[in-house]
Amino acid sequence: MSVVALAGGVGGAKLAEGLQAVLGAELTVIVNTADDTERHGLLVCADHDTVMYTLAGLENPEFGWGIAGDTWTTMHALERYGEEGWFRLGDQDLATHIVRTERLRRGERLTAVCRELQSRLGVRAPILPMTDDPVRTQVRTDDGWLDFQDYFVRLRQAPDVREVRFVGIEAARPTPEVEATIDAATAIVVAPSNPIVSVGPILAVPGIAERLAAARARGTRIAAVSGIIGGKALKGPADRMLATLGHEPTALGVARGYAGLIDTFIIDTVDAALAPEVEALGIRAVVADTIMTDDDSRARLARSVLAAVGGA
Ligand code: FO1
Image (cartoon, rainbow, N blue to C red; front, top):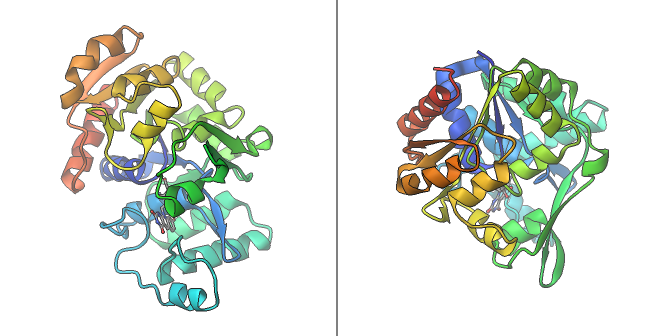
């Protein structure tokens, strides 16, 4: 087995953890890097780090991001110097960004640096940045364009999103590791991450969608899990974002966005009535309990997903 998961932040990390529990190193996660941000001179790879800490069993259960039990001493000291403190970096988390930034400055590739961090934390499944090139999500609100973390953290996702762009995407290239992993995949799983700003950037890296299509043409199954349940995102702004961008804020709306890419769509039991409309898109609908509250439910959903892609 060589299963590839495409993932963004917290929802993606939870399913990735369930998949890692079942598959170990037979899983590779390709993560969004368009949420990355520079803070206090350091590169923060938000989605990579959320997935890495989760797969290492270190994640902060209260937030879903950051490290459990982390402290904020350096953050408070930075604020004393007048630095902005709305994007909170814990003391242990800061060590990750210091090491990453230092090694990038020495000329190492982002992928190599991330792989080294993962291995130091004992993560079994490789986590690959979608690209080594800088890509940054920006959202247009009624007040103009904002950097993603400005919208997401500073403004707490309050403004309506009218448009989304991925700055730098045209020049970005998938890494050789991402290309080889997709080419060797026996199954591909799109995690229940925000389809627009978490999965969207991965699919927008020139060459990745074409590679996924080539894998599917060779018979590799591609399934996606809906992150929208009963018309609501479990976490984050995906439901409101879908609506203000002109999509239906339901699992069906997500399925429509993935039509042509996936062959199977996993919807929650509360959305079972949407199955015929999903199937009318030419996508097989699988109904499962998709809410992940603990390790057991993460592994259970992982097994349902693997069964749906013929991998279990
Ligand atoms: N999310 C927040 O809501 N508030 C924060 O202060 C915050 C800090 C942070 C630091 C490091 C990191 O890796 C992630 C962090 N996140 C924070 C999460 C992040 O903004 C989002 O979860 C993702 O970008 C959305 O997928």
